[in-house]
Image (cartoon, rainbow, N blue to C red):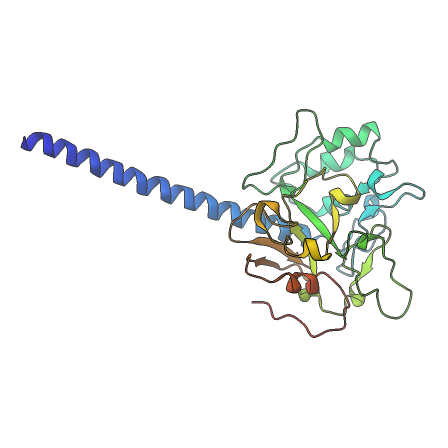
Length: 280
């Protein structure tokens, strides 16, 4: 009897130890994925500033403006253009992936549907993927992005133009389809303005312009509550504790589901003329 009890005791101890080990490994993996997603956003934000309007000429980068939300082709709709990602590719980490080879495959004089660009678009770009519960596109489909640029308030925010002088439109955000946004037009403060955010909502190709890579916060009454609503929200959906956003100064902030929609709506614009939001 005592021998049987000893065996049972050993088995119970093993089960408890294995349970603790699995829990610790799961927690460690989660924390590593959270840090990796924040680092991805930080890297993208650090290179989302340039002095050239042509990504092929962006050899020397100086933080003076947020690039256009698309590679502008006159007469071509934003959804048929290449995305802003082409502007930041030259500065990304070459150790994780052969970015130079990928960049050379892209023809920025042609639209998204161009055969050469479609070939590049199928490349899985590591820095554009959140490692936690990453959606998988269909075989031979373009690779997706888990991060999108913030265009301001409203689904049409990316179409808003900045006047040559005077205040920016009150709904305007950091990104717009057709032009760069100079840092000096972001009068709410670079650290107080959203640049990019995580989203699990309808992730699209990283190389495609339009909704796939640039989005305004839907500020209609029915949509406000869904800005940070987990898997069903406009943003976030990868981590239960909230969503990561890059700010225009290159920093990264995590906003929990307890953050009110009003805070995110306020941070989405570049010049609302109201008092700032205090961020930790």
